[in-house]
Image (cartoon, rainbow, N blue to C red; front, side):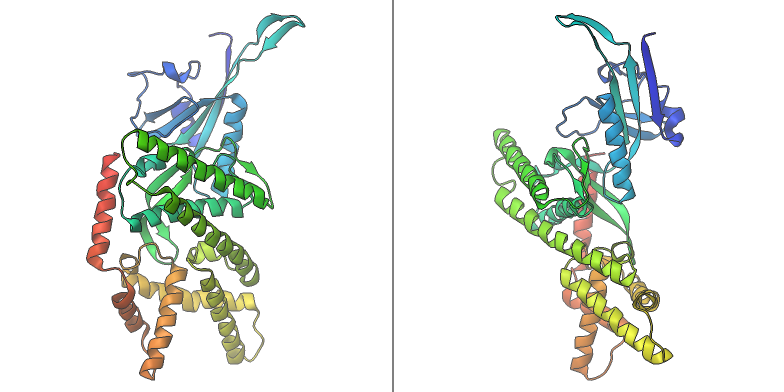
Length: 399
């Protein structure tokens, strides 16, 4: 043990709890009762991984190379800055041992026996994608899962990130209560990147590399499907061709949406995704831009001076968009339209309001338009409640 040196790089808020752990030993020797191990469902892993609890907080620790532990920690920190769903990095530990001398024909060679430990937070309500796909969900719920996967792939590619080993095994699904911009908090399903060993940052990511990620991910679906068949689950669990076609189509839609979002943000000075959520249709971004253009004209006429577009966009957001969102929250709109963003609902309801006013021959109150839209196009509240209850029951399986 005296030949071992430890280099501990852990965030300040976790250092006191984690630094005393037995980093001198491989993870296979971390045993109860000295270590509080946590039972959690694992996906496939190339490395030894354990889950532990320290002072009411849970962590995942992966044993790998020194270089990889450092590199993967940096990648996760970078992904977090970009708000890309991924594991939350806590830090890493390098266990360095004195080089071991070995006689070779070329003389004495020294092997450096360094080991790295990557530490991430183990979140509640997170499960491997592969476990979820074993369950016979409805086509509607499967589309929700496929959309979350497509959104993750499109988001990382939009930020010039090449996954390199995109697969079901390297993906987690997180069930968490998150803030929906403009609409309040709701429990949603988020696909999370859970292995960054092969991630590369490549500004202006080539289409060939994007396609490589998709091909790799779809190949992993084929492998997983074969594993299910061999395990006796049967082909009825899910149809892989439908799954792959759905994910690809949704991915292409989100790639186009993100490209249009970039243009919208540069033109208006707003951050559409952060302020309103990612629209589900590309044409909604065009409509939002048209509303801002109309508001610019209105302000310029009212103030008798030319208003800059970015100034008009800020005023539209404060005095038009946010008040509409306030009305939507009062109507508990997310119960009727799960999965919709504020951008989606603003466009759809304001369009509905316009057509209803045209039929009536006069303007109608926003509150009336919202209630009418929910009644005609929203999910039945009893159905919404059943879906929420199903999710809550499902989550208890993994507690």
